[in-house]
Length: 270
Image 1: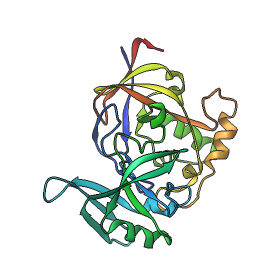
Image 2: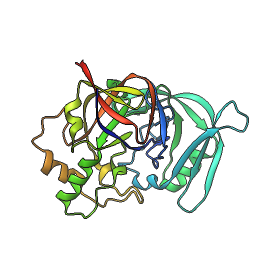
Image 3: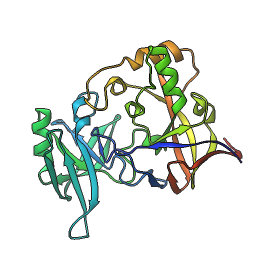
Image 4: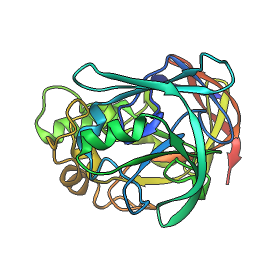
């Protein structure tokens, strides 16, 4: 194996649609990173309340910690005005969370969270807890983590006439890699890749949506990323339109930290 790059940044979303958090290291399992997109907001119809409809929700910072009692998780939400809503997670009735064209089993989360999020959004929302990586976008295809290259962000900035790379948080990817060429990950589809102590296998491109046009600090549209992708990558042969980054299954679980090497695994392509 030859080192081709390194882990530059890590991001997970404890509550899908809220702000990302940026651990220095994570454990990667066959169900993805524990705690990543484990909680989801639903609208009054039971459908995903995503950043495409609720962009400013990205300004709410979630965190998950052991409960005071020690036998539950404790969820904390810090709102932009400094208000913190925090409580032990109390799973309630089973519900179907409907998104990505399927109903996913979940449990309603009781407590103060739904009321606080509803007030912020200006419409009724509920919070549910998912299991086994089901909140990850391409879980149905086996995609439990996602990868993009830092160089691709610089290339997009150049196309947009910006002086600094495009904010990596716009794309909400698990791992951002340093030291590899722009969009090198496109060529890894079907190839086993060692990232730190884990091995993953990219399975396809990630087609981008309007969330990427939003400033992560405000949730408001500030850059036409979709136009830029269409103009610079419209002729790329990809598994999804408007490709930027790839999703991957986890072949070998392990711990991954910032600065860890990235290596292609010889003879492990399918």
